Image (cartoon, rainbow, N blue to C red; front, side):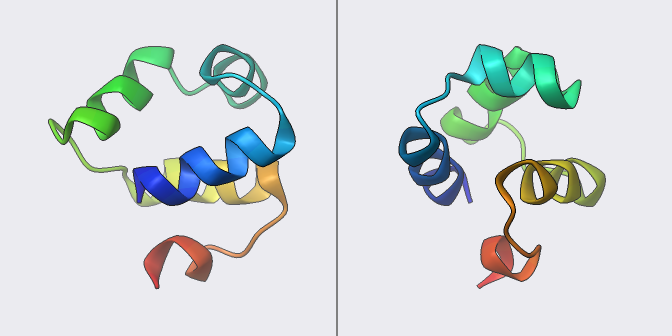
Length: 61
């Protein structure tokens, strides 16, 4: 999932900090996803999907 998020973030030209500020998801959460210490909860996936204008299914494929 993080790889897909990373691709969307880079394509949009934003940082984890910007996504965090715009979505309310703590920046540390992205680090936890990247390292594999945690997996995103559905509510956070929905926020990110909405932020980048993609469907939730994009992350679940």
